[in-house]
Image 1 (spheres, helix red, strand yellow):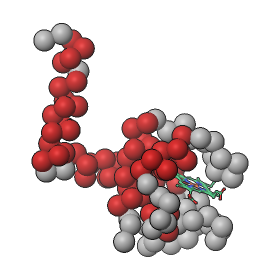
Image 2 (image 1 turned 135 degrees about the vertical axis):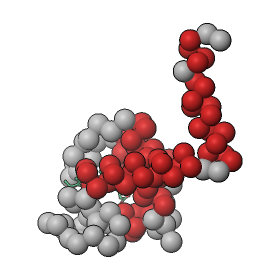
Image 3 (image 1 turned 45 degrees about the vertical axis):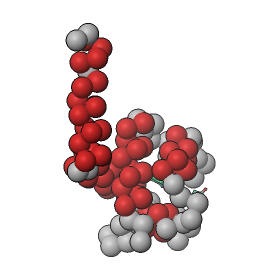
Length: 109
Ligand code: HEC
């Protein structure tokens, strides 16, 4: 098998496994939660449980974001891929964006 294809094998494996049992998805979510705790919790209430830091009511909590009808994986990707005036640009990788989006979406009730 060519080297370039060999690198795809773990990805494919994960995709197939995710479709079957979704442990890979669970891992993405855990990584997303870590990113949220590390980078986002200073401003956002990231789980609706954590005590407030110096947050303002003008900053939506992640459960609130998750429950907005306009919120989808695609809308989160667009939002997090573009700079915002009142939010720092963390230059998240596509992978980090996908993980943190998955975490946010998992908070939907
Ligand atoms: C310095 C404070 C700050 C940090 C840190 C921060 N945000 Fe925000 N975020 C904001 C503010 C303020 C808004 C509201 C922006 C607006 O209304 O224009 C916002 C809005 C959002 C929204 C959009 C909600 C909507 O109305 O659609 C999402 C999603 C979001 N943030 C995700 C994140 C993620 C993910 C992180 C961590 C990687 C993060 N934010 C870190 C301040 C912050």
